[in-house]
Image (cartoon, rainbow, N blue to C red):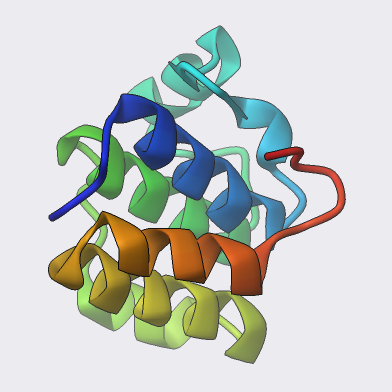
Length: 112
């Protein structure tokens, strides 16, 4: 994956999480203590859709998400699935592609 730095990666995780109303779980520096606690229980209290996006964010962050493609396909509706798929593609290109993804998928609750 290609991100400019941890700040860009954290911003991308936060925007991705905003697609399911979970932006509060990430900061400009990375996961919050609440996010770490949720990861430690495999996102158990979250809805299946929210859990899938949450674990995908962890997969980007440090590989610890442990979500399967089958779970993502089963649990995501079009909006979050599109955001996730395009972020995967952008991260395979370069940091500028991630910037483009951030511009397209920005959410009002996540400031740049």
